Image (cartoon, rainbow, N blue to C red; front, side):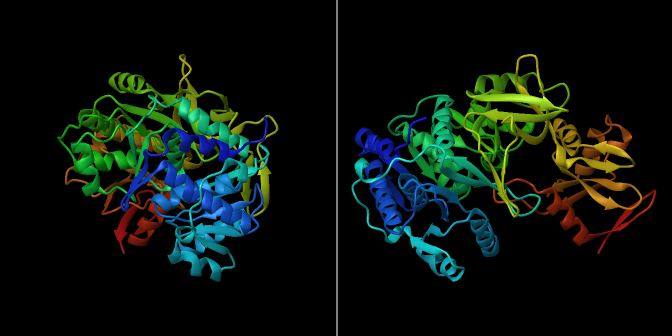
Length: 496
């Protein structure tokens, strides 16, 4: 692959869409011309500061225009953009930036002192003057250089830094655009609410490359979302299942026209959430399979196929269908574990012990247990690392959760450590209704006795990470802080 000239790519967008609105956030709007002038200013600033092509540069922002400017600025400079999660504690921000090997971090004024105090060279993006983007000013970069780092969600400890080359980043953006259900145009708005450091940024880049408009909110801001839905102003929404559940609960019983696609992934979509979304928006939900190690797209289930899948009742084994491989993606199974190999895949990861490349055959073991049906679609069954052992039996929590969801009862299944049983199966629901336990027990009646939860508990709020995913070990820790286990053949829980 030849060298990649990011500035030429972005200059073409300015020439095509310069006066159009590119991004809308809580503070206002910014045009394509303004976005890339600000980004060119950041790129020039980084080059003047000695940042070399392929060098890892951190970005630390809440959702908003500065986050978009910083991402494009690092890209135009040829640096390896390294988004740092704004939801992390200060200690976690420092640890992940150090793990990635960042010397420079782009941020807003309020974080300059904190970053400098920990030895980073901090750059306030909002204080950097824009310049006209001149493609001849910035260097093309070698495709094998680092192009972007992404962090895993950190559900088992400090996140790993996943390393993408410039080539993989370029191809991923092209492939994501190829998988869009329609091409956005002038005024075609996509709503992004999840942290920009993760999936929201990828959708943003793909949407802007097509001339559309990105509405970037800092979280699920219902008062701002309501008038956009009521006015039919949104053509697409990026909403993982937890976000989609919030939207359908907040606007229950209403119907909104104009939304042509809801992109969802990161976790299986419960049938009840899909039914609520379909009633509200129509059959427009598109499912995908996402991993930090392989930038989307990995697999895609188009809206019409998603609707058919849920209408037919889902998988016979209770798995979650996530569709067919996207262009450039290969799937394989190894003792039930899903393996991925892709043209746009990362090259490896960094942890405390250093850099680790993927296997020699190029496949990435995902840790997901799955199957591929006769039509070639991937079905996710469980997480390998989530397996529990109770009474000598291996149990996957996802199977129990699906049994509950099929009966309209949602809960998280965890295993409480037990000297007698190994682990004790517990169902935990967030602010459940009064009849929840009876309905949940009835939903589990068809499961083998060793899979049925012994305890059914309700919490006001379940612990989630920055991406809105439930973290099972945090749920266990919460339970252990609230209850004392009286172990034995007939275990009991008592409140502390």
